[in-house]
Length: 144
Image (cartoon, rainbow, N blue to C red; front, side, top):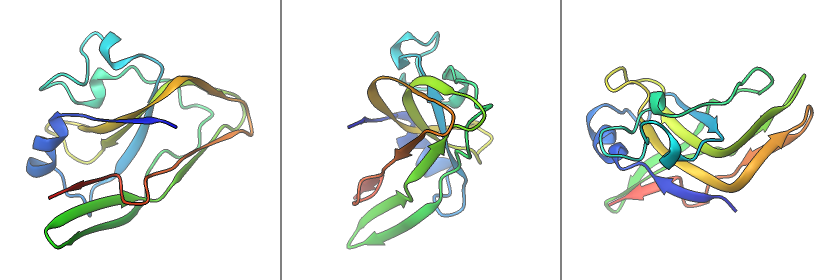
C-alpha cells in the first residue's frame, strides 16, 4: 500500500490558483526521494513540478486523471478522481517509487503539486504490465 504525503504548498495554491472542477490534474512519476531533490518539493514555497526529477514517459499510457467527484456536503469538501491504470507499451516504464499528483492548469505557480504517494520501493513496468493507482473511496482529500 502506498503512503499518501500532502504537499504543504497545495493548501495555499488550492485557494489561490486552482479550479478543482475545471483544472487538469496529471500524475508524475519519479524515482528520486523528495528530500534528495536539489530543491525538495516538500519545502514551503517549493511545491511545484519543476522540483521533481521525472522519469521518461516514452512507453507510458496517459497520466491524466479523470475527476470522479468534487462536492461539498455539510461543510466538508471532497475531491476524488477515478482510479488510473498506467500501462507500459513498447518498452519499460520506470523505475519509479514516487507518484505525484499536480495541477497542470495554473501558470503561476506553474504545475503546483497536490501530493505524492510513496510506494516504498522502486517499480518498473515491463511492456504490457500495468499499475493501477487506486484512490481512497472517501476521496483524494477532504477539507472542512
